[in-house]
Length: 480
Length: 149
Image (cartoon, rainbow over all chains, first blue to last red; front, side, top):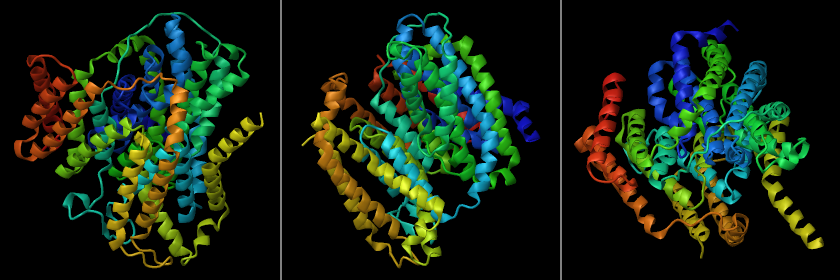
């Protein structure tokens, strides 16, 4: 437990500070997301060593959660998916001249929820890690499948499109050596492709280069001030809800913010005002998405499974620094584990101190014209892609991913499921093949244990549930 | 045929090409699965999803139009060419990078990109390019020792 104080060494404090500031800026700039930004600085963080490097990456992750809400409220442009809900009431509050109050509440809600989730993380992560030791290949396969199905259900507007992107990601993951036998697949004799597609190159291309190509829109600022205090109950509800959602596989922060908004619409005293600029609509979802971001660290740190693009980048960062997340992380690298968790406390305090006075400044960053910003982003993408493996092939991958990402956006496909398919693909393949081998070719071996069977049933239910509910809705409409 | 029909068709073609290319990897048996198993499953699944997308495309398109109620404006036709030019610039960038090196090719990329995205004149893009290329060279190559092409 004393390892928590690792976060307080000057070098780690600096890494945390740089990470949170970068994260806030990234969250504020529409078009730049936490996952792409983390991938951009990944080569840099490797130089810092595992603890400081991961603290900086994590700082970007939750800094972006803060920054994302700032632009949602001020300019009605969500910095990232988890702050989409905040635009509903946050932007209306800002137009009523209550932007200051909304921003302050968002910052405080994020702080309360972030701190709570860190405490809960401390208790829950070792427990989950212990349970995870009992997980075999079949359980991992079921869990990964469940996560991808939930993800396809909840991202984008069309389930078919999200599912197609997940599968495309899994297919891209099969390029290079196969995870068990070492056979080289789909490389078409390109030397650079043997090790597989560089995750950094694909992510920077899909998220950053693509947004430079597609060009994002900017709007005017309406900041002003006022005070408010109805946000404590929704904040607490959002925190608990968000953390529980964060434990589940899937894009937790985004779901949590939507769930919290739904709950506030049902139980809040001021539910009638929601949708026309009620502070509850900011406090609840903002608390929920931050608590979920903390909760989402549990599957990452204790199982080694990322379920959001940002935690996927964090995972690849860990692997590059030869820290393997999973049940043994706590035993093998206690200083890394507790140092990163300790940095969450420090980071939350820093973000609160940074955001309350500097909110105006951060909001102004959102108005940097894209014609100056985007060219710089393109050059950074090239540096990040190349330096991952010192390989020009990866620059080609980045360029191709950038063009594909632009096309995907134009055709209304979301890149996030693709990235997760790419990350979880090798894990799914390895665990499936191992499970089959262990069961001597009996497919029943995949659902022989209770946890595996439970998760597969949940995945099956999740994949038919939307179709069933649509059918029920159509029938009831016909009955009326 | 709508936009979603075309993307469904494209995905189906991709899945078929992938399945054809994956035929040379052995499946072996279920007890000792070979490297061809997962590509087969993934390719067939994508083909199925593409067919599903094709069938549901019409309905989804109508529902979209109904829910957004015309809130999302279609992009103006004239601007549609610009991303293509920028994409081409990126491809050329990757092609000349090994020959010309990082500094020269990045300078050219920034000038072209900022002009395309809307900067006026030549002086500002050139200064911007000088700044971005110089700072990133000093920061990455000199200070952090990151190898650059």
